[in-house]
Image 1 (cartoon, rainbow, N blue to C red):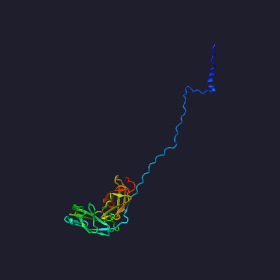
Image 2 (cartoon, rainbow, N blue to C red):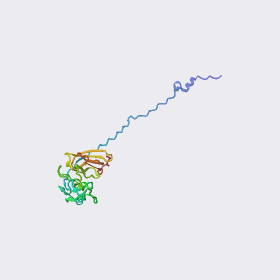
Image 3 (tube, one colour):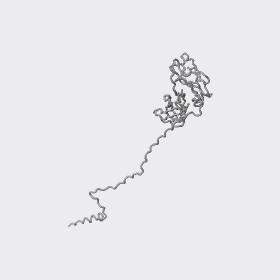
Image 4 (cartoon, one colour):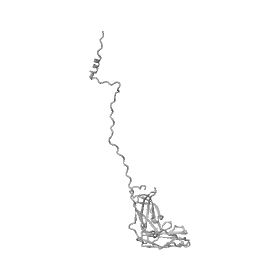
Length: 289
């Protein structure tokens, strides 16, 4: 006769070491949950925003003023006289007559006729041939002409007049060769004696000019200087000053500029020229104006 098997609870108790020693079994319908993973740490410090660079400070405004410590001098043009007619048969022998007054010994006289280049004239002489003021081989055509004489100092700059109403360091005259038309009323005219060099160093820029027939201007009239960026054509500054010959421009920044000088009472009387200002040695390269 065979032995009956023992109770199952005793077998389970032997295997687990007692019911309290067994780990609980998972529920058959509930999957095993994975252990929660640690979330990455979030930095509390956020990146600081990038601040825009401050704008470049504007260039200081240039200043227009009369020349300091001027050297005085005066010249008087005697012939030709205003609106004089010189016959074509006499023009080859005609002499220009002038007189220097209170000119310093180191001053020199220059003259130019119409749009011809300026010519150095002897300061000790009182007369020169009219045709010496035109290039060789060039004839003086019939019609109206303009002659200008000016006294320059040793620095090649225009001298100044003695007082507001004193004699000027320049003289101008309008005359005719051959037949003369009815003389037109002479209007004030602005003329450059020596255009500024096309390339100058930062600092003081002399502007040498004369005002022909200035006595026809109303009193207390002035000049206007427009400073224009040569590349962009943008007008950067407009300066005004009483009519004093000559003047100087100070504080013009480095770059390429077009300068336009005109009379307030007669804006059509104007001159313009271009100049490039370069920094002094050791300074930064010029920025585009």
